[in-house]
Image (tube, rainbow, N blue to C red):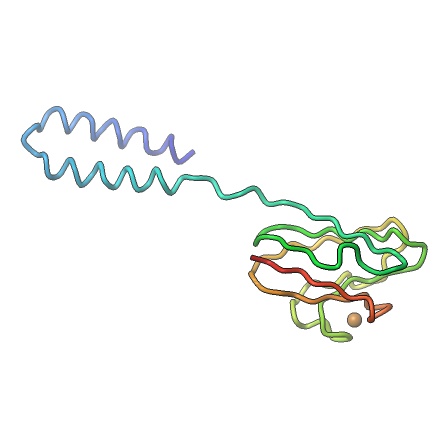
Length: 137
Ligand SMILES: [Cu+2]
């Protein structure tokens, strides 16, 4: 999309460069800007999804390393209910919104997208000794 918007600009630059051959300084400055904008169109990495299983033994894996914009999907693989939520228990205030707000039954999932860097501890609200960590870089 950005490339399409830049095309008319390049066309104008080409035309002005041909019709005003003596204006070398201005042409150089303008072309320099164009080069910089090309570098900025490098696409950011695709957001990814990381799965964390909740089993009778707790979270697996216990530590997840992700990037800003990535999503962690918690899946209850156990017969008992589980409730992933941000630390600290019981207020879950370290990272607002990171809280399934109810126990997940077997097979249910809860997804949370991390939008800022940091190290965020979490736990099973129904079994607070089961803990884990999400590191967002
Ligand atoms: Cu809790």
